[in-house]
Length: 376
Length: 60
Image (tube, rainbow over all chains, first blue to last red; front, side):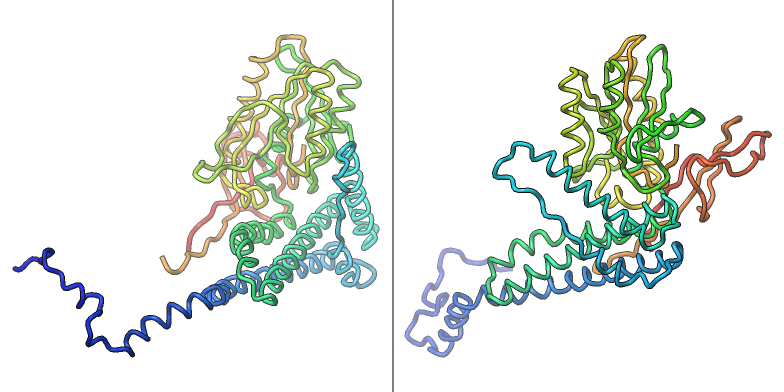
């Protein structure tokens, strides 16, 4: 066996620099270099475009499916007097213009006003499809409309970015799109899968907070404390408990901050405990339970702001327990692992009450999240 | 793997007896609502309540 001799390289032969070099071969090697220097980005643009086009096709299918599902749900369950399609198509295209942020003073109130106006008017418009529909059916139809509307908006934005980059033949313009597309596709697929869950009225992963508090509320007198928000007064080892959750089993998150505001205005509260679903980090196990401090509530931020403002003004500590899950798990049918955490979280809430309060104290426990399929 | 395995979600309902605590897992059927009383317990005379509704993913 002979080993490679590293001591006697023939550099001229290796780099073909000798006199007998074929100029045609040199051209064959050099031409592609020039070609890729001038046209490399354009080739990358075509390759990337192909991938993005596939994604956009899927997004188009998702938005059409969600629209068809909404129309079939309305026709089957709500029995509208007139053809609902023109109205539904109009609702799907509703948009929201956020207030200007140049002067941030009072921005939260402005955002809250716009978001709530949108919710209120959309609700009334959906109700106009079939005035006899129950509140539960109404909340389901509204959620389906939100999903269809979101998928429509996502499709339009991604398609716009793609077509602009193609029109300008601009590779750097398509790069951010290539980077965000996997995340967008993950969320869109989750939204598409969520449709059947909301239609059937099943609990979603985000409903773990309302599920735990809803069970604590069973067989007790309920009162409406705020719009689509339920309150139950209870007791635990000498402490007074104010249990708050969105009013189920309709698909809604309620207005827990308004509920808290009312409770705090009438009672002296010593602690607030919030139970919510939280997005897990990559690598983290799904359905792990974590405790912490601060208001555990998602959404656009107005409810969180309101809860923090109330807690700060009255000097009330805010404790949180969260159940970790992915975006998909949060809006699709609750997984077994998440459902199985319910008893453990309930036990941790009891522990938290014992550790942080004493007898005679009053505690507000809020189950945060979408209460679709979760009564009380 | 070149081809992704298709995932399907099987829907289940877990009923629990409020008296003896016995649990039963069955396929989800339309109309099942959490915390609703659904049937009589087979081991005692208590009522079964829907404790959980969840999905389990299966790869095909």
